[in-house]
Length: 347
Image (cartoon, rainbow, N blue to C red):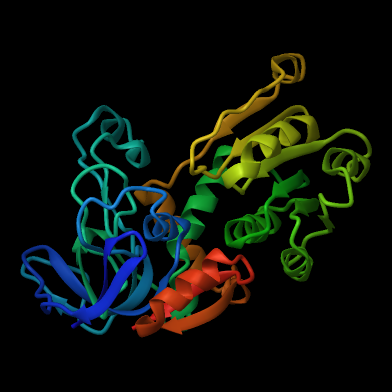
């Protein structure tokens, strides 16, 4: 089978590798679309470590090709998506049901930074535990089904913010994750959603997908604008959906945008690492909740599958490019250039 193997930063080779066979309790999925995630880009660019040759990729959809012994409820030909994270089930956090914080977390395609790396979905086929496989609605396009995993992360963040109908929401960052937060905020009944991003094409896409206002931080003071658009009160929920060198400033902005009693969610991780200076009085006197959200539990992933399968949350507009696997370097460069939205690979 064909796969894109990363050997070192900027050294990815599309080559023939050994075909996979499903073992006991496993299935082999024929990959139809696999999304390019910032985690993949960090490893390709050398920002985070690559300890061994690995097939990256963990956001994907496809059809079941082979079913191993002992697998129930799944059949060859089923259209599926996959939770790429493998939990130990024995650590303190797993026993508390906080599977996303598992101390021994493993993942396909190097999506978890700990433990032995498992080959992922930048290939024609991928082998996965059957318990991680979810049948997706037959009418859902493969490129939308491949977004179930990042959607689950966004859904976890929204649920942690305790978002309510009628809330005013600010989303900082209008990349693919910010846009998914936007669609979820609307689904949860937000009365007003503002989104801030310095890139004009991202602001235009946010307005197209339902934002009430798109703030240009290059020409507008985001805090002033957000408060002006919320009658001077501030937002009930602020989601920081961007990382990198700007994240520290955006977190501080979020604390000044949020209303008293509101919530600021640090959704995005940042690489390289950075440090944030905060005014604790904004949190103390305003009774502001500052929280982080990371990944998702199996229960939340199941909810994301249901949302995608229902057709009530269409995500196709967020996918801007589908690139053949043979052109993976082109796909990485497009994603790194930030001119695209979600980039997918098609074996």
